[in-house]
Image (tube, rainbow, N blue to C red; front, top):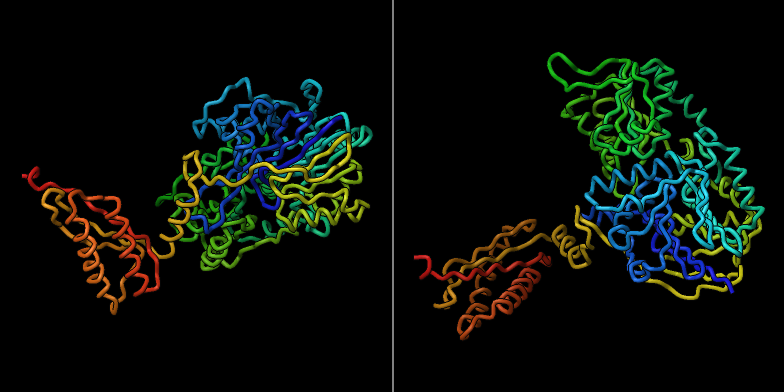
Length: 561
């Protein structure tokens, strides 16, 4: 009996944190290990990664980690995998170079022998199982799909892809590989879903170039583009269009954006030297305001918006935005940046009215559209389909596409993270179990989960602030030496509520009397009772619940003499 299991530790019914597992005869093959951008209500959280306790508990069964491409949604939690189980990791050249750079930047120690670079058309013989990489188009170099060859048929994971024929991909080889997989039989297709809600193909590169050429030729001054640094294909397209219009190019962010620096170093991003301009800091003799200059403002998440705001306010060291400038915003807001994006546009419009924004459906494709998903299904003809990489609406849209080409609900599975889909002898038998899943929230360089308690405290701090009651107490004489002093941060006492301070001090005196008359002071219970009493007084008076922090300092005045 042959058995295949599929489950996800992230990436199902969410955007990001992609981590999928295939088990073949008890051996675990990990597909991608990504991170997710936190929403705005997660105060101070820098990154969210999957809970990998299941992999840690079963690390002896892990064959390896196989990566599709270098976006953070797919490699952002690799360091976590390395620190926990240190498996062999397989990736294409560009993906591996970006991964190594990220690991070195974060100070993660790794065994170089475990990081194995593979070609975009490679076959790995891993005992009874072969794993094949095949080239796919996306907006980042060396993007690959992954095929796990089993006795019951191929299991194909596409990662992110599209069929944009302007990408630097050998389409003949790509379709030949897909045809070979189809001929060998495809048991299971794990196809991306993010673009499945798009009813038709997005704008073509020809339409994009036409719009950009029109703007560049009619602009009276500099043209400033904002782009995400991960969108390397589009950055190169803008560079090519600028060159066609005989414009000089200044790429801002190439030193701070390590992904771009690596792309330039490896030749995946090319700016001819005669068009490349290295801007100097603005001073009395230099304004960097050449009318034939195209400025590419690049960054991650909020960074392009932040830099545009600095330019608009004339506090940037390289560019001061002027009324003659044209601004083209190609950074559609992502989770957590919606407000900043809107605010940035307002600030820019105060300087120049020549501002262009583009809806996603007017831009060349990044993720597979509905028709491209349909094309992938029709080429591979899988027995079963599991939509991956997307929120529930994306997974559902992908299932609708499968239904359009003849796949019933019994052959298309919409799953949740942690569900285990079991296939026995090439037949789906159902969701037969579950594994532990969850989110680990990271703050700065802390590798551990900051936890629900910390997040609750941050939420309370952001909502109601904090009140600190401090006092110095002599443990020998059992008397209050100094205080109590009351300090509030993020919490204001209204003018008609000044009596709260008196009530808090009275409460402090009452609680203190109870503990200072005992033989030994129980400092922990003292603080807890004081916190409870003060919280009750503030809530009754203001209907607010700030964090209460009692600071009781044991002060021996005899030792201070």
